[in-house]
Amino acid sequence: MVVAAASGSVIVVNEDPEYGNNVWVDHGNGYTTIYRSTGEVKVRQGEKVTQGATLFVIADDDGKLGYQVTRDSVYISPTEVMAISG
Image 1: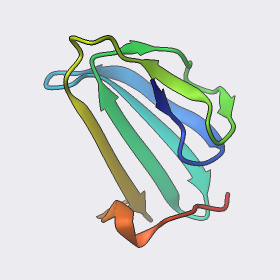
Image 2 (image 1 turned 90 degrees about the horizontal axis):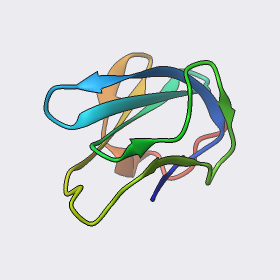
Image 3 (image 1 turned 120 degrees about the vertical axis):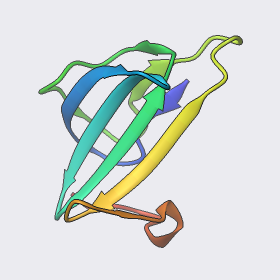
């Protein structure tokens, strides 16, 4: 299971050629998290999610997971942001 790192609004749900699916969550204050997985997407574009909400369900054979963070549309290391307030 892949869960939201922080509360926000789902702004993108689409297919990704390498990972299978994309889910982007806008947390406000310029922060967005991007999740990529071949798992089953459990959210819809426009949906509000809380921290810990399930974004994907990953089966044993779903081996890839991508996670990225942007601040003001620039990719940053997720280790720079341990908690996002939105």
